Length: 421
Image (cartoon, rainbow, N blue to C red; front, side):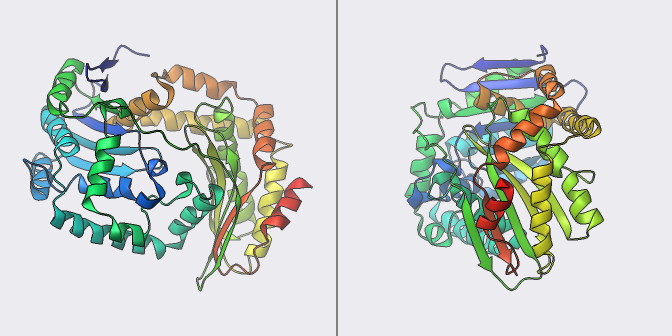
């Protein structure tokens, strides 16, 4: 760890972490809350995302328009996102405008008014967002996949919520949820760029002073179930996601699984891309991914294909899953290592990426992880490690989600039989 990264725990319990980057003229600043979709009660599914939208809709001192104008008057950028385990609010500005950015993020997280007219207006926006997602098959298929993989659990519910729940969600639910989860113990404030740590700490102490300090409600553990979702629909393409139980951030096999994904479906040179698209022309898009969570994870493969091609696509994919358990070349391993390392090192050049990384490291691991440690872990993974985790993953119960003209897509039982052969 370099001496450019510093952290301070305020008397309130709020953690502030910064990384100084002398060669840039900007600063990224963000508040990262350890709450998301998996923290929501069933009757409040979508509240995290609804709350994220409402944070920009006015405070006791700023209207929604004024928030946008103040940031854009100085050429800055403000945004937020909601995930299954995290909600984030962040700004990027010139270094001389850092105080404004901290002021606005602190303001929206401690003094939002949730005016009823703004709640109704944003309710309509979110319903439009849900409608758009439902009309986008290569987007909504992942919601069906997640819901099938973690059936009947908060981990499996859609981040946007459902139309019925959003339509009926009262203002009081948003305020209550924010009060319970947006606490000093459940948030890390981070900044990266051309900054002084002590200046950031002083600004946070001032503008986050009203953040409550109280115990955080427990979250449900995620239990992978697996299963099958099939929906016949009049589309030009069949959309498929095939997945398996995987590892969380803290699992010793985290880096072998990441390298497995790179070799199997991580780019144009990957096995799936070369075999399925380049050699056979069965798809336009095919790739693999690993989604780690704090206590579990899921590994998946996505493909979009034609109705007739789907019949050939699945057996070819399964053959690659079996083959990678037996054979990985030195060239493939070296290429996968290079991809992971370059992605990591390139992210160091972005203030936004570094801001998020140092916050997430504290939330996930409880410490800052040196880059050298991460690179060492990538370098020490062997071909045998990757083959072993491939067997560990692909012998687990699969999850299959399919949407579109899917009559020729094999059943989950058929897939299980081929993988067990």
